[in-house]
Length: 281
Ligand code: PEP
Image (cartoon, rainbow, N blue to C red; front, top):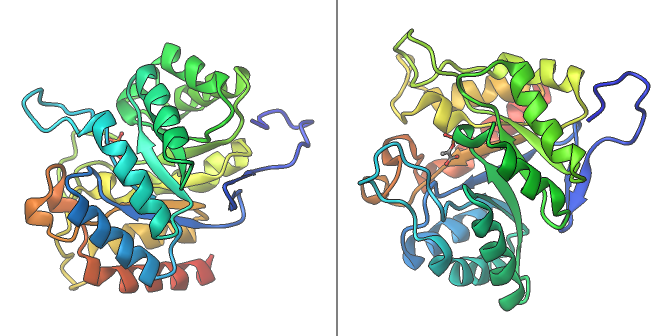
């Protein structure tokens, strides 16, 4: 991953027509958890209307509480992929928590004729699930978004990325999503986007920021601006290459993380804020 100074191999990769590197920026706005075709279609339509070709859609949800909604899993994959293809989506970031999910996604993509692409997301709870990393690293078909572990050192999370790379898959985006601290307010997690340039200096991986899981709430900051927009701007100005962000057409009906989902009407403004921040980078 370029952690050796004499490694001069080109940075970044292209997947399904979308470029991922340390110089550009892709936005992955979408549903934290797939719930029903109506909401998925509303989301996809908003993305298409705003010129977006990437999204996030959670089918397998790692939940802290076993009684919480765990995601529709395999059963939703065919219709999610078909709908995504219909709305021009090229890449869906989708978390997997088990190697069987990888097989299910690959099968569903094949069965539906590859209408879209999938970036496999390894969540913060699995950053050091080394056996999962090795299996995901052994396939080269799908790129990987590896989230930083929320309670381990940066070095340990970067080593986790090496598990993917050492097995052969170097198409990795490294994700910052906030760290657990005992500091409490104002955010659910300590926003760690100051590490964007650090990771870019230490490795050749494009860096993703996840303002939704960092902040954990859509509530407005005292000056009337969205907190999620604030921290997104910080990350983009720091040089982020990907933004993973939760939206929902009706957040009160979202089955996972509704309070942090932005509204579809906010999408154009959110994208505009990103464009302004990007100019400042
Ligand atoms: C998510 O992106 O849906 C998620 C659960 O993120 P994290 O692993 O960062 O908590």
